[in-house]
Image (cartoon, rainbow over all chains, first blue to last red; front, side, top):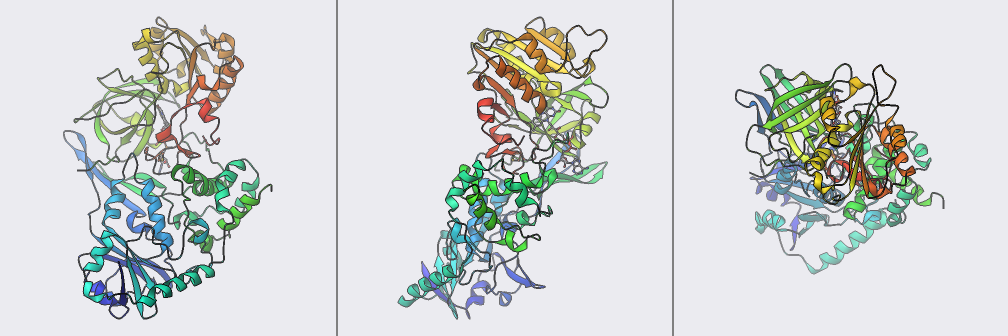
Length: 346
Length: 274
Ligand SMILES: Cc1cc2nc3c(=O)[nH]c(=O)nc-3n(C[C@H](O)[C@H](O)[C@H](O)COP(=O)(O)OP(=O)(O)OC[C@H]3O[C@@H](n4cnc5c(N)ncnc54)[C@H](O)[C@@H]3O)c2cc1C
Ligand code: FES
């Protein structure tokens, strides 16, 4: 289904979505972030991209898996703490970030479905905003089977036409969302389609950064696993971990107990994001570490995204959002690294 | 209610036995679930044990699946969770989730000779498969165990090993000379070279510190053992146990799910990140 919604009526649509928790990008002290929208008028999808992807809404940085405490008969009582299935709309999702969720979906399903992830994921409706202009100079979605107008993983895609949005309804969830305010949406004039096509072509032209021959990289990564290449590339790394914390596809986590009282025992088991760039991530209790240096950890980050994940799911675990390049304090640039991988020894 | 794999099931410690004292203490724990459970494991699988308030540790199930009365774990005191376990007393409650990982393909090994090679706490993962093979002795050929520890005081299952000698060939070793020690002195790979096991129709299972595994396998290869005949287990740091938290991988393999049991034929093709 394709519709037109004027920007003037946009807040009225939001008003109709009272039964949903609504997240939208909000500007705070110069940074855009997804926050719960308090006031429909403050929504402004004309933004580049949020510092953190909407992954944090589905898979929060810290969450309580269960509470535990002393109990007479069994010794310990465990109370599961699953999130409520609160219908949620996330507005302004960029296509790269929507695609990223389709990748974390793969990790959190399989033999062991992750109920914490899926409670939130199933309750979330993703309303995307096509990138008429690449949000970052480091965008490279075109190199990894993405596009600034990609619909993958979205329920609705909006394209900014100036004074109105072109609205593509892509799933049943999306239909319900638009159906909640059907009268606000009008039919699409014939010319719109070609207008959108033109916007798309122009947007694609504006993406200048490129990983060359990405399809050759998985094999190449295997080939150069033991090469000194990685030491050179990782030299500058200060192990801050920003590259993976901001990555919309990274999913590694830690599990720890937090104790409020020892007697009687009372505490929580907590899951928090973790980071393959940290030395403790893989360090055994004996002190032995299978990835003991920056080189092996950078190799892991790149190989996971461009080799292991491809082997497991036949997709890159990278959607080209450019965040890890934008924010790396020492200028490690995944595009450059990948291009060097391809050229190595050639 | 949907299944939630992160929730451990409460279990009682029904017996605790000190195997080794001192700085590298090892205790063997037997557990019984408090409520109904569907926990059923195979040889080589592991379980995530919880000490509530301290966290979780992945531990091999050292009892045989043939043993239905309890589950057994032999644990080296090394950090936060394992130290807390060592402080616990019979009747205390822990949490258990699992079983996790793949298992030794013992059904495929029927009719073959089995050589078990363990170092230190590495006897724990071997114990389950060894007891199972002993329990179905008629299904297998000759059974042999090589077991080495730093000193005789560092041996696990000391009494059980004495019993075992009546049922199968057992080659013990200690790393350095000590008064009263009648058997081999030296590292496990040296003991293997000394006893020269025959590769014909034989499977080997090696568990222990990474350095011991490496040299034991080299020693076996010298006698003509093929990669497909050499099995081992890999222990990488684990948190989730179900292939999601991302830390236990060797290349595209998650050791918690795709391991811990590997044949050398598989392992030699994976990156050396273990
Ligand atoms: C497949 C497999 C099978 C195994 N089988 C056995 C076995 O049969 N027997 C055996 O003895 N061992 C076995 N191990 C090893 C065992 O899992 C580890 O020794 C154990 O997890 C160590 O846990 P720990 O909490 O005592 O150690 P620690 O090193 O203390 O901690 C482990 C975790 O807790 C965190 N942590 C520790 N202290 C703190 C702190 N103060 N603050 C915050 N975080 C902290 C660490 O960061 C780490 O994540 C096995 C391991 C694997 C992978
Ligand atoms: S322990 Fe989490 S992925 Fe293996």
